[in-house]
Amino acid sequence: MAELSAFWDRLADKYAAQPIADEDAYRTKLARTQEHLTPEMEIFEFGCGTGGTAIAHAPHVRSVRAIDFSTRMLDMARQRAAEAGVDNVTFEQGDITSIAVEPGRYDMVLGLSILHLLKDRQAVIARVYEMLKPGGRFVSSTACLGDSMKWFGYVAPLGRALGLLPMLNVMTPDQLRADMIRTGFVIEHDWRPNPKSALFLIARKPD
Image (cartoon, rainbow, N blue to C red; front, side, top):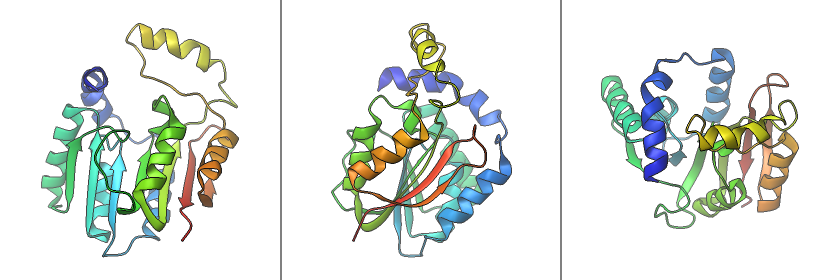
Protein backbone atom coordinates (compact mmCIF):
# COMPACT_ATOMS: atom_id res chain seq x y z
CA MET A 1 0.00 0.00 0.00
CA ALA A 2 3.00 2.31 0.48
CA GLU A 3 3.49 2.63 -3.30
CA LEU A 4 -0.17 3.54 -3.81
CA SER A 5 -0.07 6.01 -0.95
CA ALA A 6 3.00 7.74 -2.40
CA PHE A 7 1.42 7.98 -5.87
CA TRP A 8 -1.83 9.53 -4.63
CA ASP A 9 -0.04 11.73 -2.09
CA ARG A 10 1.78 13.36 -5.03
CA LEU A 11 -1.53 14.10 -6.72
CA ALA A 12 -3.49 15.13 -3.63
CA ASP A 13 -3.13 18.90 -3.87
CA LYS A 14 -3.92 18.95 -7.61
CA TYR A 15 -6.86 16.60 -7.04
CA ALA A 16 -8.25 18.76 -4.24
CA ALA A 17 -8.00 21.92 -6.36
CA GLN A 18 -9.92 20.47 -9.32
CA PRO A 19 -13.61 21.41 -9.59
CA ILE A 20 -16.16 18.61 -9.87
CA ALA A 21 -16.37 17.75 -13.57
CA ASP A 22 -20.19 17.57 -13.68
CA GLU A 23 -21.68 19.32 -10.66
CA ASP A 24 -25.29 18.55 -11.65
CA ALA A 25 -24.59 14.83 -12.02
CA TYR A 26 -22.74 14.77 -8.69
CA ARG A 27 -25.67 16.44 -6.92
CA THR A 28 -28.06 13.96 -8.52
CA LYS A 29 -25.95 11.05 -7.25
CA LEU A 30 -25.91 12.52 -3.74
CA ALA A 31 -29.69 12.91 -3.82
CA ARG A 32 -30.31 9.38 -5.11
CA THR A 33 -28.06 7.99 -2.40
CA GLN A 34 -29.66 10.02 0.35
CA GLU A 35 -33.07 8.62 -0.57
CA HIS A 36 -31.85 5.40 1.04
CA LEU A 37 -30.23 6.92 4.15
CA THR A 38 -31.80 6.90 7.62
CA PRO A 39 -30.50 8.33 10.92
CA GLU A 40 -29.58 4.97 12.45
CA MET A 41 -27.48 3.76 9.52
CA GLU A 42 -23.74 3.09 9.55
CA ILE A 43 -21.99 3.41 6.22
CA PHE A 44 -18.53 2.70 4.86
CA GLU A 45 -16.71 4.43 2.03
CA PHE A 46 -13.54 3.23 0.30
CA GLY A 47 -11.50 5.51 -1.91
CA CYS A 48 -12.90 8.52 -0.06
CA GLY A 49 -10.29 10.98 -1.37
CA THR A 50 -10.57 14.34 0.36
CA GLY A 51 -13.82 13.37 2.04
CA GLY A 52 -16.42 15.48 0.25
CA THR A 53 -19.01 12.74 -0.24
CA ALA A 54 -18.60 11.26 3.24
CA ILE A 55 -19.07 14.71 4.75
CA ALA A 56 -22.15 15.37 2.59
CA HIS A 57 -23.85 12.16 3.74
CA ALA A 58 -22.79 12.32 7.39
CA PRO A 59 -25.73 14.47 8.62
CA HIS A 60 -28.16 11.81 7.35
CA VAL A 61 -26.70 8.78 9.17
CA ARG A 62 -25.32 7.66 12.52
CA SER A 63 -21.73 7.29 11.35
CA VAL A 64 -19.44 7.05 8.36
CA ARG A 65 -16.16 5.14 8.27
CA ALA A 66 -14.09 6.28 5.30
CA ILE A 67 -10.77 4.92 4.03
CA ASP A 68 -8.26 5.85 1.36
CA PHE A 69 -4.72 4.93 0.32
CA SER A 70 -3.41 8.51 0.54
CA THR A 71 -2.37 9.95 3.88
CA ARG A 72 -2.27 13.45 2.33
CA MET A 73 -5.86 13.20 1.10
CA LEU A 74 -6.97 11.88 4.48
CA ASP A 75 -5.37 14.86 6.21
CA MET A 76 -7.37 17.14 3.90
CA ALA A 77 -10.54 15.16 4.59
CA ARG A 78 -10.14 15.50 8.36
CA GLN A 79 -9.59 19.24 7.98
CA ARG A 80 -12.69 19.58 5.78
CA ALA A 81 -14.80 17.65 8.30
CA ALA A 82 -13.57 19.84 11.16
CA GLU A 83 -14.32 23.01 9.19
CA ALA A 84 -17.82 21.70 8.42
CA GLY A 85 -18.46 20.78 12.06
CA VAL A 86 -18.97 17.13 11.12
CA ASP A 87 -17.95 14.79 13.94
CA ASN A 88 -19.52 11.44 12.98
CA VAL A 89 -17.02 10.58 10.22
CA THR A 90 -13.75 8.75 10.83
CA PHE A 91 -11.02 8.82 8.19
CA GLU A 92 -8.29 6.19 8.12
CA GLN A 93 -5.70 4.80 5.76
CA GLY A 94 -6.65 1.38 4.47
CA ASP A 95 -7.24 -1.07 1.66
CA ILE A 96 -10.70 -2.58 1.35
CA THR A 97 -9.23 -5.97 0.47
CA SER A 98 -7.42 -6.25 3.81
CA ILE A 99 -9.01 -3.88 6.32
CA ALA A 100 -10.69 -5.56 9.29
CA VAL A 101 -14.49 -5.52 8.95
CA GLU A 102 -16.86 -8.08 10.40
CA PRO A 103 -19.28 -9.64 7.90
CA GLY A 104 -22.69 -7.97 7.67
CA ARG A 105 -21.47 -4.87 9.49
CA TYR A 106 -22.70 -1.99 7.31
CA ASP A 107 -26.00 -0.70 5.96
CA MET A 108 -24.36 0.89 2.91
CA VAL A 109 -20.96 0.88 1.22
CA LEU A 110 -19.82 3.66 -1.10
CA GLY A 111 -17.24 3.12 -3.82
CA LEU A 112 -17.15 6.26 -5.95
CA SER A 113 -14.64 6.82 -8.75
CA ILE A 114 -12.60 3.88 -7.46
CA LEU A 115 -13.52 0.47 -8.97
CA HIS A 116 -11.73 1.31 -12.24
CA LEU A 117 -8.56 2.07 -10.25
CA LEU A 118 -8.37 -1.36 -8.60
CA LYS A 119 -6.66 -4.45 -9.98
CA ASP A 120 -9.33 -7.02 -9.10
CA ARG A 121 -12.74 -5.35 -9.09
CA GLN A 122 -14.57 -8.68 -8.77
CA ALA A 123 -12.78 -9.45 -5.50
CA VAL A 124 -13.60 -5.97 -4.21
CA ILE A 125 -17.27 -6.29 -5.16
CA ALA A 126 -17.37 -9.63 -3.35
CA ARG A 127 -15.79 -8.03 -0.26
CA VAL A 128 -18.40 -5.27 -0.31
CA TYR A 129 -21.16 -7.87 -0.52
CA GLU A 130 -19.72 -9.62 2.52
CA MET A 131 -19.50 -6.35 4.50
CA LEU A 132 -23.15 -5.44 3.93
CA LYS A 133 -26.13 -6.41 6.03
CA PRO A 134 -28.93 -8.25 4.20
CA GLY A 135 -30.83 -5.53 2.38
CA GLY A 136 -27.78 -3.25 2.43
CA ARG A 137 -26.76 -1.27 -0.63
CA PHE A 138 -23.58 -0.74 -2.61
CA VAL A 139 -23.43 2.68 -4.28
CA SER A 140 -20.78 3.03 -6.98
CA SER A 141 -19.81 5.45 -9.73
CA THR A 142 -17.30 4.01 -12.16
CA ALA A 143 -15.50 5.17 -15.29
CA CYS A 144 -16.27 2.48 -17.88
CA LEU A 145 -13.89 3.14 -20.76
CA GLY A 146 -14.19 -0.23 -22.46
CA ASP A 147 -16.87 0.88 -24.90
CA SER A 148 -15.66 4.38 -25.85
CA MET A 149 -11.91 4.28 -25.10
CA LYS A 150 -10.94 0.63 -25.32
CA TRP A 151 -7.52 1.62 -26.68
CA PHE A 152 -6.71 3.19 -23.31
CA GLY A 153 -6.32 -0.30 -21.88
CA TYR A 154 -3.15 -0.68 -23.97
CA VAL A 155 -1.74 2.73 -23.08
CA ALA A 156 -2.43 2.60 -19.33
CA PRO A 157 0.17 -0.08 -18.43
CA LEU A 158 2.95 2.02 -19.99
CA GLY A 159 1.78 5.12 -18.15
CA ARG A 160 1.72 3.19 -14.93
CA ALA A 161 5.23 1.78 -15.50
CA LEU A 162 6.48 5.35 -15.96
CA GLY A 163 4.76 6.47 -12.77
CA LEU A 164 2.46 8.80 -14.70
CA LEU A 165 -0.81 6.90 -14.34
CA PRO A 166 -2.41 4.81 -11.61
CA MET A 167 -3.63 1.25 -12.06
CA LEU A 168 -6.50 1.47 -14.55
CA ASN A 169 -9.01 -1.32 -15.07
CA VAL A 170 -10.69 -0.78 -18.45
CA MET A 171 -14.19 -2.28 -18.51
CA THR A 172 -17.53 -1.82 -20.23
CA PRO A 173 -20.75 -0.93 -18.40
CA ASP A 174 -22.14 -4.38 -19.19
CA GLN A 175 -19.08 -6.05 -17.67
CA LEU A 176 -19.51 -4.10 -14.45
CA ARG A 177 -23.23 -4.84 -14.28
CA ALA A 178 -22.48 -8.54 -14.83
CA ASP A 179 -19.89 -8.50 -12.03
CA MET A 180 -22.48 -7.05 -9.65
CA ILE A 181 -25.15 -9.57 -10.59
CA ARG A 182 -22.71 -12.49 -10.50
CA THR A 183 -21.80 -11.58 -6.92
CA GLY A 184 -25.46 -11.65 -5.91
CA PHE A 185 -26.45 -8.00 -6.04
CA VAL A 186 -29.74 -6.77 -7.44
CA ILE A 187 -29.26 -3.53 -9.39
CA GLU A 188 -31.92 -1.04 -8.28
CA HIS A 189 -30.69 2.14 -9.96
CA ASP A 190 -28.62 2.35 -13.15
CA TRP A 191 -27.78 5.79 -14.53
CA ARG A 192 -25.31 7.27 -16.97
CA PRO A 193 -25.86 10.96 -17.86
CA ASN A 194 -24.25 10.44 -21.27
CA PRO A 195 -22.29 7.68 -23.07
CA LYS A 196 -18.96 9.01 -21.78
CA SER A 197 -20.04 9.55 -18.18
CA ALA A 198 -19.31 7.32 -15.22
CA LEU A 199 -21.82 4.54 -14.61
CA PHE A 200 -23.75 5.17 -11.38
CA LEU A 201 -25.22 2.05 -9.80
CA ILE A 202 -27.15 1.39 -6.61
CA ALA A 203 -27.10 -2.35 -5.99
CA ARG A 204 -28.84 -4.14 -3.12
CA LYS A 205 -27.82 -7.26 -1.24
CA PRO A 206 -30.98 -9.38 -1.03
CA ASP A 207 -32.65 -9.81 2.38
